[in-house]
Image (cartoon, rainbow, N blue to C red):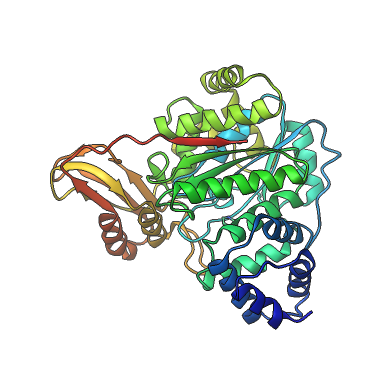
Length: 433
Ligand code: URA
């Protein structure tokens, strides 16, 4: 086979065979195909797309590009939850301990922030001492002992995705449906969970900006997961506004703790309840209504929070901070951003909010950047709220003053104020199963 012919075939709108797709991935990982040819193929895929058969072959090729984990020595049903990426999305920190408190096993591998979106691993590292890089045997031991562990992705797992993602990130080919499906599901299938619930984000803060595209993404991921023998479900959820009020690592951990204490923002609480109830239903813990009641109970009686504290302790973190979140340090500097006119917040460009948070130091602009865990944004008004000129719409936090001007400009540009109260949009648009 020749890479040139494969690029040309896709460029001309042809469908690649399973053999061609596996050949590309194997030879890319072993270094036989250079980045520039794979970048050209990604761009051809971006414009020409891939059918479901090609996308399935690409997903399985990514899954098989490295080590596949064996969790068979973890006793009990293993569940995972994965978000396609959003702003202020701290649901894993809430949902995972809640479901673990009902005896399903959460052996979860999570990612770091990508582009304007945050990542669970960066958030967990805001907890002092918390280790996200554990040997697989230790990880499985913790899951067997307490029911839950969340670690960063093992370097051997789906190495093709690591290479492809880095390439897509710099060649404007991230937001391609087949490339997202194969990236997410390739990694998920290389781990060894029985049930996977996906939170497929849609709207201005997600990689898929329209409901139609997000639905297609959800349907394809569910279909491919089922083909691989997994119990699958996907919720399509709104990312046209940030989730909750906090954006930024420590700020989000504290908001997650408040939510597990029953004092969280309504949107975040409702989404977490739904995700956890769907996971428990998929794990056959009862029908949806019963599972929802169980989840609300675990928030009301603090069982979910206790489970988060146990996980933090087992992974070397300071669990005292989980029980006393006021111990998380606040940033050295803050700035209040106020409304310049009276009116309703009619809509926001959520990606702009994510970028503003990056500019404050909450994420990375280059791989080498060190995160300022206390940096980020706390929203004081969200879509649908009425503000008067001079009212605060957000508070920015950072350990460096230099990012404030750009972050404020970005946040203002991303906030639309108008005279008409906008229509209320549902948080959960659909469930695909
Ligand atoms: N998350 C991933 O892991 N990969 C993508 O392509 C998009 C979101």
